[in-house]
Length: 226
Image (cartoon, rainbow, N blue to C red):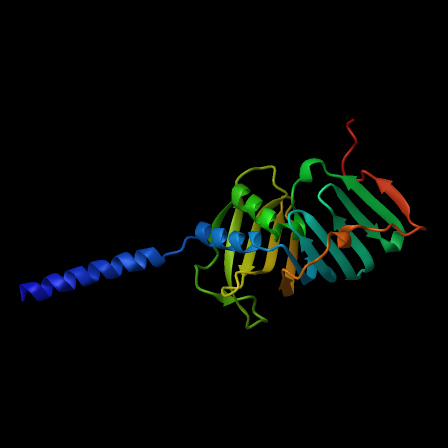
């Protein structure tokens, strides 16, 4: 009898240790997601951006470490390109090309957060917690897709987003949706779908040829301090 009781106690103790090892914190989960994205040489995906009542659609291309390009279908022909040093935005409705030099790679924001370097910055500047726990939940009320939702709350006042909700595919650990609340209370949502990774995107894709009829406006975001 004593031997049976002892074995039962040992079994319970071991099961408790195993359970403890299986507990995953939100910070650990973010570390896993960041590790997956850090292993990508490049990726391409369909992207949908909702800001307020405005919807934008297109294709996003990323090449490690900083290259990012979005070719929009709505607004048609609009382009955003970042090559690690220069941000270029083409607004076809105004026949305008806006450029901004970004020393040292600058701060990653928007769709660029869904990259290896972007997730490193998120983990550094935001505190992670599960929105509803580590168990997958529906992406939204209109979708049967299951995701793990992580709430990121900024640690410092300098961040452009006050809070970010990441919806992560529990199998692939790919980010399906990012919902950001800006410091002014605005909402921006990025949806990623049909994600293809390590497909050999050339650096040439991130070289942008300015339309000859477009007007160019340099350093449209930051004043030149030199």
